Image 1 (tube, helix red, strand yellow):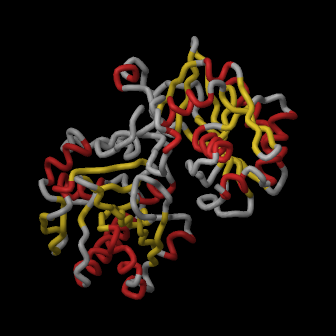
Image 2 (spheres, helix red, strand yellow):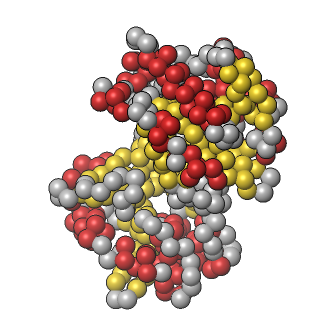
Image 3 (cartoon, one colour):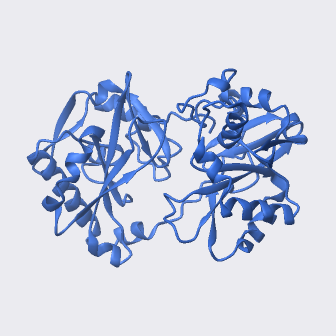
Length: 398
């Protein structure tokens, strides 16, 4: 439990708490951080999260956004958008992260501050994409917990609260609990059907604007073909994935508004593929992106193939090689900040197609596969969002 204890002793935590107190913004330790504190108090090996989660009442969120700069030049804030696609809360952002200004955003220790809004006798919030709801008795009045002479505000009826969030066996909790799948405060589908969808605002990325000019589309295709050639030559298992597969099968080409191309690979081949840097060089660079998630049994999320020159021109076309992990009867991976899975029958054995003079791997039962992920895949949909509409998403409550 040393990790959680150290996090509560950081300057970042003390400064954040001091700012909230000075600004008369009540807060409480929540979710995995609360479970970690209870583990310290009870002497149990409960979840030890790498970041701190605290909650505030929703009416103070606008005020917090205005004052967070008072933490000083050593710290910065990041607004986390509401990815639920629903009008569950009256805000386009679902939480705020505070972190060091000088550390890499992806790996930096963060304090996540989530606003929770009272509606009737319940509180509701969005946890990235999952709409959540809980009885107001836990937040209407807060309790405190004393840990090594330090006082922390926590929800009322805390053991009952933890049983609601983590299940009745929360004292035996392990690292497999996932807040977007296992949290019983996630709003069920029948309740969500009554909540209207948010208007989707599609900001057009610079990559997409540039893709529609000149020969950038062909350059991205060349990058994909080079990647496929290398994987074929070295006899690595791979397959066309997601929108790249969809465009090639439906239209015979990459989707015009896509600015990346997608392949899937077995996660256990990622380290060997990373050794092929010289095969890609000098035209392309390959980089790995890791993630820590109980959803997958490893930390490899994706390998990215990029060009060094286009980034200088503020163009960031790339090929993503998503790392998939076999877990029981499914394959799992993380894409577009979403936890995804699909039956093993699609990837265990592969089919092939001919495209651009090459034999290229695709998932087995490909029409069933595309229907599962895209619904009516034969009709183009420019508003498709891989983090909301993909039928392979395992998360709930959106």
